[in-house]
Amino acid sequence: MTAKRPARGWLDRDEQRAWLAYIRLQLRLSYEINRQLQADHELSQSDYDVLTALSVAPASCLTVTALATQLGWERSRLSHHARRMAQRGLVSLDPALADRRVTEVSLTTAGRHALEAAAPGHVDLVHDLFFDGLPAHLRAPFTEALEHIYDNVLARGTLPRP
Image (cartoon, rainbow, N blue to C red):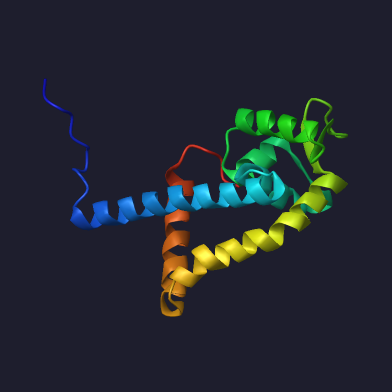
């Protein structure tokens, strides 16, 4: 049996180098961020992402659907994760006033305190691992490249736009 080829061909050397560099970076950063948040504050990166998104939302509250869309998660993943966070007192889950069939996720006082406690160490880690490795002259072009890639993922991906 002949192996199927990608419609646009295999990655060329430069594409493969860029893709593998991204994958290595993404996996290692995710590991380090999770390790630091867990060790210092008993939070996962996913917990931190949810808390951060809620902290900047109007009234610190979003529907499950809106929060999942903003984070780029499937709705079911967000629902399960929010339930676990609610059991720990970090968020609350309540029916929306406008439509009782819709569940809203709200940041609790304990969740806000957890985020405020974790944020300084998280930002220090981002500076240490990410920005200290990114020369100042590359920051703007790197940011622009990431924004273009993100826009392309939004345009061609399967999740709704945030």
